[in-house]
Each structure stands twice: as C-alpha cells, then as structure tokens.
Image 1 (cartoon, rainbow, N blue to C red):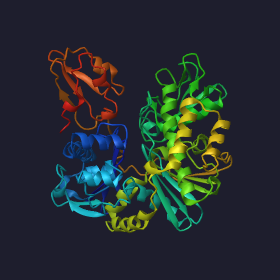
Image 2: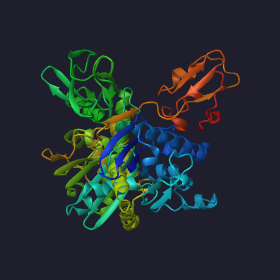
Image 3: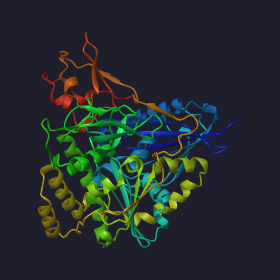
Image 4: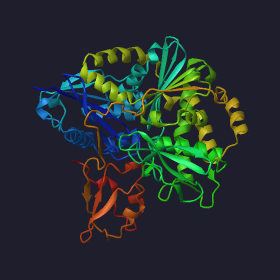
Length: 541
C-alpha cells in the first residue's frame, strides 16, 4: 500500500502544493495557484478581510482552495498519511482557524482592551479532523511549524535553514522576495529578523500586465543590437528567449520561442533597469510618446507600474538598512546575500543589486529557490524537522525588529517613496539620508558573484510535472436592491473581479481571488446609485 504526503506553501500571492511518495521520497507532482484565494493584494489585506468578515469565512475560503490543490494533485485520498504547511503567521493562523486579531493590532494596550489573547503558535501536530472542512481522512497527520513573532513565521525560518545562513561565518542577509518580504541578518552569532509589507509588485500584481511566475511570463529582458529581448518562462517553467521588441513601439522585431502573456515581478525589475539604462525612464516618468515601455503588441509597462514597483523596492531597501543599523554595522559590511522565493530565483540578480533590492556591498549573491515549499516537503518526509524549527524559533524571538515601530525604517522608507514616486534627485537623497543619521547607501558592487542554485524556484516538479489552478476558489454572487445593472462596478474594477452573471436580474458575480478587498472598494465608491455595499457580499464557501 502506497503512502503519500502533501506539502503546502501558503504564500501571500498564491499557494503551492506537492504530493510526495513517502516510501521513496520521490515527488509525484506539483500544483500552483495563480493567486491567493482571499480578497486583497497583500497579507494585511487578508488579515483585514478575516477580521471584518469573520475568521470562519476566511478559513473556509482557504480550505476550499487547499482541497482544490489536493484534488488537482490527483492522488488517492486514502493513501495520504501526512500534510505539512509552511507560511507566515497570518496564513497559518487562518489555516488552523485560531485567533488572528492579535496579529492585526500591534499595541499591547489595544489588545488588552479588546480582550484579545494571543494563541499558541508553537509547532503542532494535529489530525485532519481538527481542521474544519479539510477533505482528507480524519486520521491524516497535520504538521504546522512554529512562528518566531508576529510577522515572522515558518516561511522565514525555512529560508534561514535552507539557505545555510546559519552556517555562514560572514555577515549575511537572506530575504524571501514577495508581497510580505521576510529578511534575516546574521552578524556573528546574532540573527536579527524583520518583515515588511513590500506590496504585490514583486509578484507581478498591481502591475497592469502583471502575473505570477507561470508560463508566458516575461522574467528578464536583455538589450540586443536591434532592440530588447524578452526572456519568458515556458511550460516547464524554464527560461527561453521570447520576442525581440522595441520599447518605444508596440512592435515585435523578431518572434521568439515562447509567447508573452504578461510580466512577472522579476521582469518588472528588469524593465526598470533597462529603461533607466536606456534613458527612457527618469523617475517617476517614462520618456516615450505614449509614456509606456512596450514588450510586444499586447503587454506594456506604464508610469503607475513604476510607482508600484518603487513601493516594493523601497520597502526592501529600507528593511535591510534598518536591520544593519539595528546590528550596528554599515551596509558595506554585508558580504553575502541569499535571494529566496520565485522572485528571488527568476530575477536577474545583478539588476536587482543595481536597482536596490540587495545590500550594495555584497560580494556573493545566492539564488536559492522556494524555501517554504522545500521546508514543508522536508517536514512531510521527516516530521521531526518541525520540532527542529521550533528550537530555532525559540532562539530567535529575542532578536526580532518590528519595522512598523521603527523610526529608522519610517525615515528610510520616506526617502524611498520620494525617490521612486516624486523623482527626488540622488544628491538630495544622500543629503537627507545623512541628516536622518541613516547608514550610508554606498554604490553597488559591480563585480558581485552570482551563484544560482536552481533553474526554477521549485527545482523538482515531480514526474507528473506541474498543474495550474487559474480560477482559485469559488465565485460569490450578490444582488443589491436598487441596482440598475449599469455595469459601472464591473468597468471600474482594476482586477476584473466582477461580472454580471444574470443580466435580467442584475446578479453580480465576484471572484474573491481577483478582488483587492477592503483596501480597494472601487466597486462601492463608483456605484452611481450608491447601492453597492462590499460588506453585504457573502464570501462563504
């Protein structure tokens, strides 16, 4: 009788799952979701959604998507013996369906006033019967690894372990590049962790033609004699030469080996770098006739995309600057950088260094893949690994830096917003940097060594390969009294999450995975009859 384990990475921008043969430790197959199932563009949106609409609703939506993943993996349910999850504290708390409001309110006084008691987020072994709605036999073992503190969870622990940061004797930084960018700085025997809501641009979201790392995504761009060559992920999630394009015109100069469907976050970094290098971008403006950089006939990059990308880049640079100051070191003392996650794998690391996503003085950059899914797989294969993570979590709790409460981070991020959003000149940037007493931002090291460990963020997709779930979760429907069916809410939705499913009765269908949630509400704000009420939508599965 075969025995199968399920490994899950509950990422902020999407979920990843693998089925593992527990007898041979061979990976059977991989499933990726195109998005996160909850409304919202970042982890705080997901948290706000759960607080506003109820923990039970958020849990039901997430579990329905996990059930989708397990079904798509297409393994016999009765053969599944173990399931392990990895993710940040918010995602794991929603999975377990435990108190989340302590994560929403940073102040101890506020939590005490509301009677909020933080739940136990240590490593746990449960059964499938303990997870409401999970479509697995009741006795399947469920492993949930420990969190460090508030913002830092099992995914951050995973990147430290899988990167070999803990064994490195040099001053080193590891960062999981994504919507919720976790980072850890090791100085001697001391490790300081931090996490910043970088925003979704590094995952290709909030970008007009953005997409997650999937077939058809432009992940890099290289200049050639006659134009710019797009490098695109093919069906095996490996890089192939795509179309040769002219940034200034929506023309294809030469057809490539893969069609372009959109641009992922790493492609955004490359477009920014090449655009600035070609003098076509002068922050925050694009110097072309239509104020766009074209990646072919159907995909382009605009000035709003620059602003969104700048928020993410600025947050990460402010983050590692804050950790350096917390450790009492200069940025130039950080010698090694580890780049984790899909964005950290597919990005051109030298361009990321030049743009500001990596400490400027590093001599080595390691691109290490998806460490969260890798750790979940390690736990599935050997459950004792989740207890080892528990020991690490206990060691790190005393060295966590809350960026939300840091004056250094606030000042550094303000400068970044001025640079990317308002075009602050570099001499002014450095002047204010010095005035604020921040660590000096030195020029990037032009000769940093790049060590890319894997061609894909998930090195082994399994013998069945990879499957994608494009429509994540299940749509909700709502009918508002007084709705005239004008369609304004549909037209104004930036993520195309709405449609009118019944034109005669004016029933509106909402895809939660596309919806930006309470952080957006353009549907409600733009309703000419003022009858659209976001709070009345029932997202329950």
